[in-house]
Length: 463
Image (cartoon, rainbow, N blue to C red; front, side, top):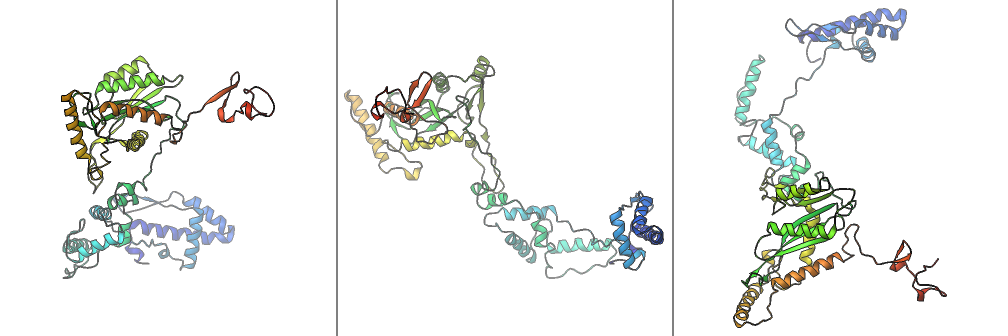
């Protein structure tokens, strides 16, 4: 035992004496009724016994069961048959790690290029050995003074402060228990892309959407420079497009093109009106229209109007916003709409860039990829347009006009809607022939008359 029974707390002394008394009673009864029955009777007799814990402290309950008392009797019988064998050999309270030290260890683990726990622990130890300040501990002289004060309170003598820093007071294993998650470490060391591999994600699946159940709207600034012939200014502009898509089949319902102006509220109304007139409304289930909050969206008045005209059939929603918040150690995000809420539209925008990549006046996806001759094309197109306007004639410009660009957009959208190879969920185009009244077959499954053996109507399929 680490301490004699007499130096232990009062309730531990009472517990040892009571168990010693119970074991003596069992030893006296086992010859008459047997050991098993004697242990069972001892449990019943002493269940609920309270142990004194000094004058002011509350009493403690003696917890015994048949299994525990059986083991205690065996231990008492082989350990000297005395009360000393029941002394609780506690190791003492575990030294608690200061919260500030835990926070510092976590900060080091989420710091760039500090991804290993051993490296962070080595940094703490080197700072400690050099006499530096460690959060939660201070310098080793400060820590030593606190430890000596604690020794004096226990009645132990003080020790002089050493000239060289002692070992770090906490082991690596003690700090590793408070290490952050792998996602938090990857976020600080490698960025959000690496952290997302460890974070739980919710996958959105639109394959089960019914027709016209969900529409999305979003704008896009094109990567093509055109000449603005509609406003009469004849200057190069980058048009802005505003799309409405039916999410279930990825069908582009409507689109509007603007020159140098931003998308206006009347453009939103026109796109929504044309899209609903083209697609219609579902029967038996509601329709949801999702706008992006970061750009011009449906006004509260229009939202109340749509939902009021068709109560329970149309619901208008908006995406959330990234409000500039950031993770610890990361740069703050720019306040903008959440792209994850409209991933279908963002994927389509990439398709739009690919389809427009062959148009003249392409600016590239970023400044570094801008063609070298783009500025010369813009100046040449501006000069030619002004000369043609003065001469009241028409010339071929090196850039498309806004009107021509608008027709190109219509052609690209029509090609996209009619393309069965774009891998959209549940969307394709088929040509069918009515075999019999109410019985339709795809044209690739119908055997034409010249393919049949013998005579017969071409409407009859092969058996």
